Image (cartoon, rainbow, N blue to C red; front, side, top):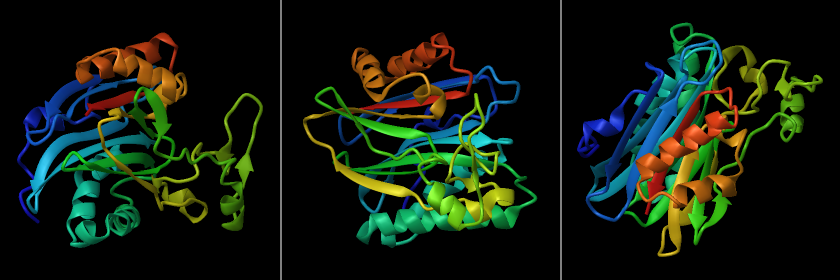
Length: 280
């Protein structure tokens, strides 16, 4: 693989070791710049969100790599994803000839590697939303779980990822021998445990879960304002359009990411809140 380490170290703050972290960076090739903010939620467990936000160079191209990994039952799986998922996507020639196929193979191969590392990585799991920006012009978004990517075109929010919720994928879960619980006062859960229908890890539930991502490309043009990647700690309390409106009102993407996290806390979000804002 060509050089994958030409980036500002501030862009690679580990997101699972403290109550909060922030940072920013920019492209050296196009006008894109980013800021991120990760804030521990009010739940009584350590921070379980990790992220990636950086620009790298490979094969004569500049790639913007952005991701949110939202862990559950510990932080070992999202930490593993932070280190390995993008490397697995980019390590083969497939990405340059068929990005969608490369992303699919890497997601499923990384999940298998996580399961093979068990018990080293424990019984937990993680959602993921990833975005790869190629030369500031082409975007590839993929996800498993309920972290989300939203694009803004002329101020209009466009959801680029799919929330994988147990009720919407009940048929797949039941076909795999699982069930979906809908207890009063609680969200739908796979086998009464997990509130997403696709995830990395979760070995005890893996027979009833999927790890294949939804993948969506987009062209970045003059109408494209910004992109937001965030964990469900944000989306549980804020609509796509509300998030876009807040981010667009603040020119600095770092300040925009911080404001989104602050607003989610003000709206009494209990979960960890992780947010990346990319301005084109």
